[in-house]
Length: 246
Image (cartoon, rainbow, N blue to C red; front, side, top):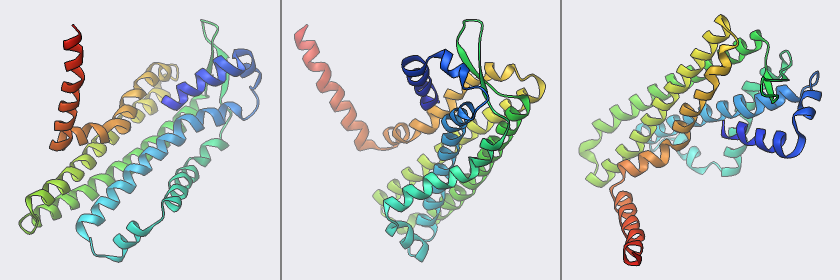
């Protein structure tokens, strides 16, 4: 959603303008713009949760396995290629549908419009992808938590807290993905009952996106005692000069 709005401000307001966007109707620009800035990055986020959940499960349940060794040894370049390619392969079929187009709203602004069947197809696929990610995430973290509890007596307190912290962050990613699933289920039902209602639902997309985007730093700050202490000390140091100045 951040990329979608940023693209709207840059492409529409700063470079091209509403007239140009309207002139692209009948081509592929609207579809690529829509699918690329919404659904592709949704698929990237879900894929990221799946990979993180799977990697966490392997690290806890099979730390000495060949798979864990491969995950640790895999170059970052290869991971980048995998993480960009897999979501694109899944989302590619959305580019082959009837074109998404631009039309002016009551304020004279160019807005994206999609045929009802396209809205339904997009919403259904996004829901399915979110559900698959949610199920995989739930399974992986259930296995990780079960194994972590069984290993508790063999770990030091520090090691156990570290492992529990990482698993807890993963669980929060899972719950964030649940909110994304709920959003796309709502979009799918709206597309069936009243396609115009989809435009009213879209602003709420920012909620699951923010959860998925910021859950890592939020949960790290909540679960990491030393980080909380550093943040508190930093805040105190920042406030002290302000008090002295007053």
